[in-house]
Image (cartoon, rainbow, N blue to C red; front, side):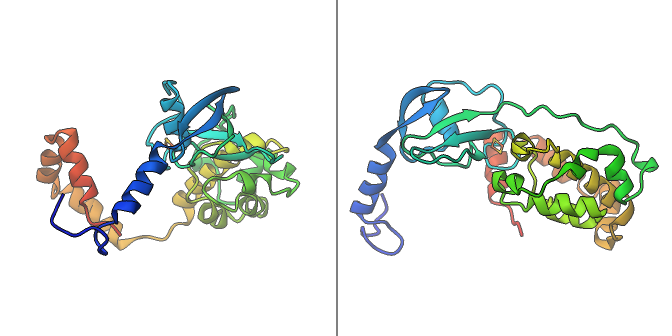
Amino acid sequence: MTGVPAGTANSPSTSAVDGEREAAERLITVYIMGKAYEVPAEATIMGAIEYAGHQIIRGAGCREGYCGACATLYRLPGDYKIRAGLACMTLVEDGMTLAQIPSVPAEKAIYDIEKLRPNVSAIQQMYPTVFRCVACGTCTKSCPQGLQVMDYVQAAKRGDIAAVMDLSFDCVVCGLCMLRCPAEITQPLMAILAKRLYGRYLRKDSPELAERVKAVEEGVYEAEYAELMAMDREALSERYYARDSE
Ligand code: FES
């Protein structure tokens, strides 16, 4: 402990610390694959699954809400709704019944981007199921990223590739929208096509990017790469979290 007195602005009071500890130690019941487990009340779903003794072999990646590997469906007591979330970001609740979804089956279209154009025909050819959309909004309600998925599906139907790219930009391809979609649309895969079309045909030139690519090609960062490559995991992690970011 430092010499800062308890209860100052920089130091939580003893009772606050005790409260946090109590919350961390409080156990609640969750149901994992139909079986009841006592888990810490403050745990994420992923933490609770591991606390319960399961090893997550598939269904975990970044553990920070970026990779989309940990799609999970759950229900809460007295609530008819099936809810969806990322296991690494969603906290458990007492009585929660959950199932992790290891992968969502989907057929990925194979295409040569040079033979497509950024218009509605590309969507029609590669992802025709988009036109089965009944605008029910289930995809939007399922998205753990809070994206307006149905809106980008509508944009795709209009051939507005820039809008699809923009509205789907933060998609982590967890697959929950396509899992719940009654029209069986594969929204994230279609969005990837739109992003590729945007990148190939619609994006504006960026002088800053050109400058940075030139610097990379000229070896400006070679010494820094070598330094990073020589670091162990701990030092690398420390450096990463201390970095300046926007
Ligand atoms: S593990 Fe990567 S988003 Fe949850």
